[in-house]
Every structure is written in structure tokens, then in C-alpha cells.
Image 1 (cartoon, helix red, strand yellow):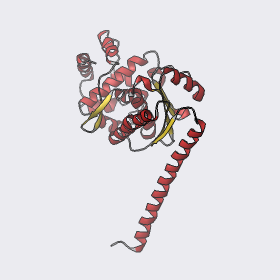
Image 2 (spheres, one colour):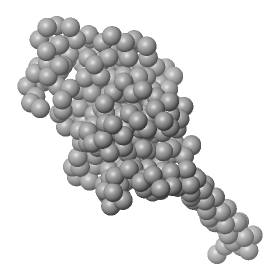
Image 3 (spheres, rainbow, N blue to C red):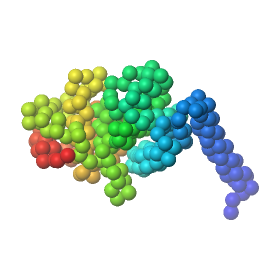
Image 4 (cartoon, rainbow, N blue to C red):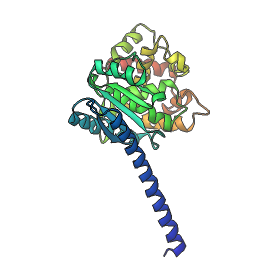
Length: 282
């Protein structure tokens, strides 16, 4: 039986939790209301889909469907398998109806000239800025990044983009998010055939600037299909957990990869992985 003091402590904790939740809710509502004032009579729908505020210029029913079927679904599934913390800041997801709207409003609202036709995450603007006409895959990809910032801030670019790009073509299997082959496959297969794909140790050792440099497309593809392989072998969640826990001692993740794979002969494994990639079809 609980003492009166213990009961008072529990009640105090519950009240604190409720007040904290209410404050968070009020913050989101205040943010959404400010956007409604800013965008009044401009054809935008503003919705709260924690930890995001979703803004779209398609018909309201379409924006609601995208918010529920893509944003909420991705957030729920990613948190189920990987992430325990929400991003610290309230982030906006802008869903522009077509390329013209995307480029016009990226310039107007963020002074950006996008270098991608699909969409991108802008940490400095606390926003995901999307041309939603290209589909929801890039949106799911970009949702990964702010969650990585909150849960695994030391992650290198190769894994941040590898995991994000894994889910740019995804669905649900056994109640979990699941990546599938996609448009990055043919380029990676050509690279393997031409023997231009680096070792995993070299890929995983790239700095941020090197990863996003001249070989960025190839780097994305190799990182993605390494994550896909780990997923198909049931090792991806284990790799994420062990890499995150041991990143100080293993900042690139290569040692963790070798361990999770069972410490194989890596040159031989990489040949097997390449043969596996060559057997895939998009």
C-alpha cells in the first residue's frame, strides 16, 4: 500500500507530465496559428502532425491524406524500429503541389534555389521542403534526417543517407517499415560492372564533403544497398543499435559492420555483396 507521501509524489509527477504535454501541444498550436495568419487566403492547409507541422497547397483533403498516410505512417514506423526521441524543435513540412510551386515558394519563403527536383531538408530553416508531385518517397527519406539528428547526432553522412534513401522506396511488412529496390540500382550495377565501386571501408571512411562530392550519386547508391542487404539479412536494426552505442570507438561504423556480419573475410564478402546486387531487379 502506498504512503500518502508516495501518492502525492505520483500525483505531482502526473500533473507535471500533463502540463508538459499541454505546453508542447500549445506550442504546436501557436506555431500552426502563426502560419495560418501568414498564409491567409493563399490556398494553404496547415495541419499538426507531431513532431511536425504540415503545410500544403493542394486541396485540403489531399493534404490531410498525405499527412496521415505518409508523414504519420513514416514517423510511427521509424520510431517503432529506431528512434526514441523526437526532434527538439518544431519542424515544418512544406508539400508543394508541383515543380513551379516548389521552386517559387522555396525562393519566396527560404531564399533557396533547389538543386534537386524532389525536395530536401533544411536544418537552418527547420523545414522539409518538398515537391510532392514527385511522390512521397523523398518525403520519407527526408523525415529520417531530423530523427537522426535527435537520436544519433554522430552518425556519418554515409549512414544518414543510406538509411534515409533505403526508405525512399518503402512499404510495410509484418507491421514494420521495409525498403525495396529502387531507381538507384542500375547506376550501382554499372559501377560494379565497371569496377568503380570502392570498398566498404573506403565508403564508410568518407568525410561529409567527400560523401557529397563528385561521387555523391554512387555513394548514395552503395550506402543504400548496403542497408538493404543488412535489412534482408535481418541485421539492420542490430547494426543501428550497436553502431550508435559504440560510435565513439568506431566513428565510421566499419568495425561494427564487420562484427555484425560475423567477422567474414571482407574482400570475399564484398564480392558476394556485389554478386547479390547484380542479381537484383528494380
